[in-house]
Length: 333
Image (tube, rainbow, N blue to C red; front, side, top):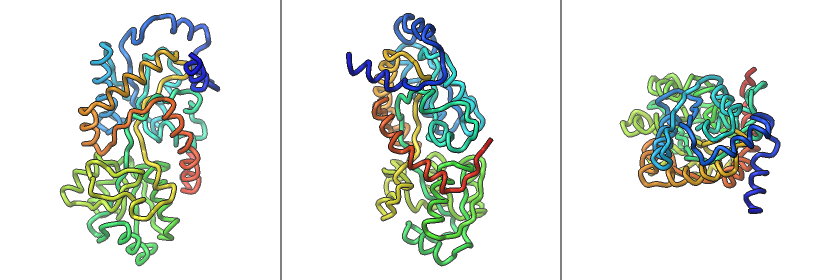
């Protein structure tokens, strides 16, 4: 009992949005969760990795709890619009979000007037999957690994370009860190999304890019690009033969953190609902079928609980903050 109460207080402390105590009490008295269909807001476009993961999770939860899970794609402002809608929703466990490192962490550095505070207005339920990112080069770059890429950059200082899938995105932060730490003087070009970065690599508009397994694996297996390393703490399952940057001797903190796909709920969602959601989510995510499916997307299924997610978030927060500030990323209004 003591553990349950203290955890609730820890998770909900400092919440600045949501409903008052009266509404919370009414929600708690409604009975077993879920009492109605559950909406999962995905703050990104349909068809992407986040959307696919959300649908897989929703299908799994629906089978386990016997209630419908409906995906609601609300795009815009780097995931902020959809995430803000969940932060402001009634905390009854019937409105959730499946988001990314960007919408749940990095956006608070990027936007001057972010309409939610991820640390106060949301309960971080579970890191559904870790998303290792591939460092890719186009065919005109002969490098096959990071040692050869570093040599290539040293020989062509100021003549190499890199593409990102957006200002302030992980691709921008990690490539600009690489640029400065290696003294490469690369030119950065921002595109709208991973698919556009991959198209630019294939068309030789840029030399280097970073992307998830969803867009990288098909092109790498077709021999149209090369993956010289994986950013993040683990290898990408779909490209298991490609070593991480850490394994290749690049141990900076920027290469130790990777993206993730995660589940969150509005602050003040009752503790019994959070406990049930976390338990059911872990069972779905840790199932062999789910692991295999997300593995095909280049992701690593995790399914940790609120306590572990919160601890990981607090460890990574200052790293992402330093990376963003050092990148020179534009601060959006």
